[in-house]
Image (cartoon, rainbow, N blue to C red; front, top):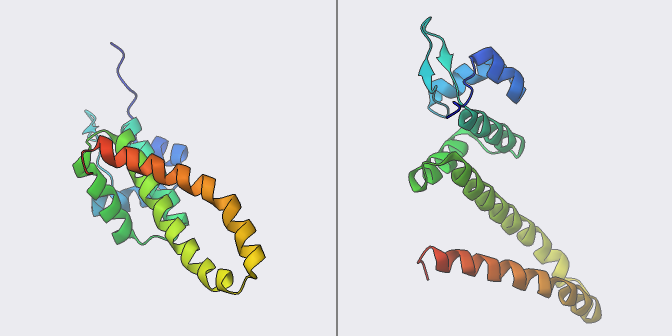
Length: 146
């Protein structure tokens, strides 16, 4: 069985395009954890840590605070110890939050549309919206939440 590679902090920083100091900071905050330590006491990070670090970087770009990022990541971590599942659930949650913000921004604009314009707009949105709602309902049903 082939072992997964482990990265020292410098290697991880290059792969994620962040500074080693940033990785130190995220580690001290509990956002990242080294997989283990080398014989020379270097912190060694896994591929899962690299995925998590990239997720953190993306969330920072999306203007989430470090506290919000920590709550999001740790919340999904309790659900699944598998980083890929946790990452996908975090992505889904972030997309839903973004959609909510965008819909709220659109509400004043939509209220000013002429009836015919509104009808055309909703006619185009309804199939996509219905498909999205159906997918979410299937997800909720699989989780036994409905």
